Length: 155
Image 1 (cartoon, rainbow, N blue to C red):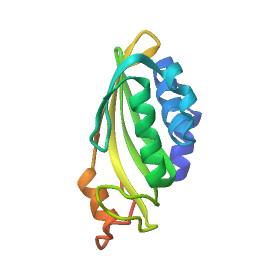
Image 2: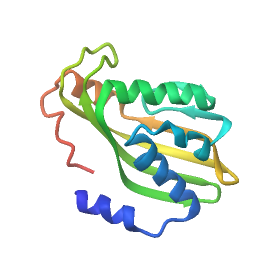
Image 3: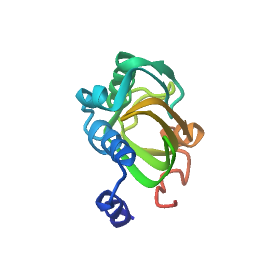
Image 4: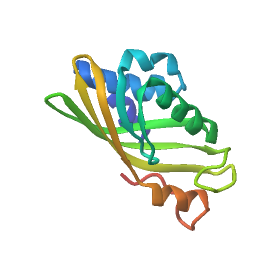
């Protein structure tokens, strides 16, 4: 499974897909919020995989800090990306170790994951809107230790 992800990172990316790659593999995976102004318009709109709807750099940076604070070693696996016009969309798997309260579930230390489907809308070289649908119910089940919920191998 990881070999396919590594192969994706070596692919020839369009400029828009490269922005998406930087967003997930450099910004999110390292919680490097200094990259936010290089990716997003100052007043961009965001709907996150965990539900919040935000506007602008500062609100988004707060969301990154919240998620990476609750999930140690937070990682984004890019499973697929597509592109049409000024939009890039994909299938991702997000995961980390549950170290902070999330969805009213106290830290368990479990490795948890969920799938998400982002749609990035570009205005020039920067993202104007990012909408992400996430499998919140699957994540909550994994946070609560639902039987069989830890198998992240299926795509």
